[in-house]
Length: 378
Image 1 (tube, helix red, strand yellow):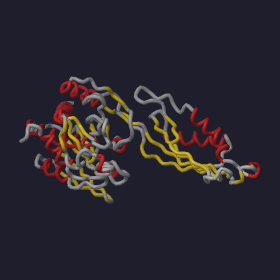
Image 2: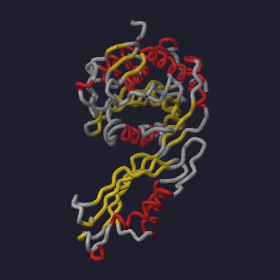
Image 3: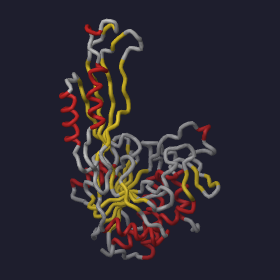
Image 4: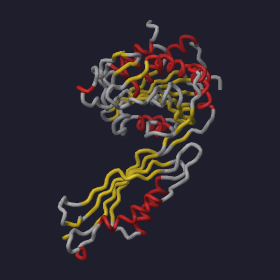
């Protein structure tokens, strides 16, 4: 065995070009290693997505590691210092696509289980891994489908650790104990096209919408809470016109998004937006898309154990945070009593020359092992 088994497994996984929704054999590597320890593997393929549910034991509590083997596309290959699917160590960092997001975490899941079960073959609780290849894509046939299946058969999770890269400046400085929801709107404001010199014969949708837009940007949707910032309304795209300077547009398209807290529901946001548009007399069509509900695990057993494990391994005092985008935690929380996200530094995720600190890789595995050990004593 190498002195850094987690690094070796991370490199093995990174060498697989598993661009979403491809898995490229990564999950088979996990199956081979964990079934040797008594895990039972279920392959769950939905559409073009490979998923696995690996479980060992039936006793409570059940602690689940969750993650994804798929990675985002590389971008321009010529801009990488080295082949993104040939993991390379340089200056104390491991470079390659998936290094931070999130093959290091997956490798750390496995080696934490291997070390723990070698030391404690009679480990008294249950451990599971929920792994998908569809987190970076549409996420329609991945974790959400596995969660539906587990829910149908009443297989619930006590504690879940999602291996998303959550650290900011040093390993373990940030634990995500929740995420904001994401609600998008595609708004078409309907006007009447006409000559710009004859505005009385046209209806300018830009002018019609302008007062409503001001109201939407000034609306206080909620005040947030101790874990979440206030809900944010942001316009991402706005377009009208034919390109000609003498034509009043016939319609205006606006794309906007809410990142919202647990203080307000998606339905409440929809109702309030419609009310503002109606109040300002806007003639419109509005299509909604909800990509994730907010979820939250308050300070409790899992957060305390994770913070203690990080402090024991690294000396770092972890902070709880709900910032950032969405993750598969939004699906798993439906069947998990407590859920956190904890992984390596996230500064380079989805970027050219994605990397992790080599010195962080093995400690992450030991943090996961400490968490498993402590949760079994609950």
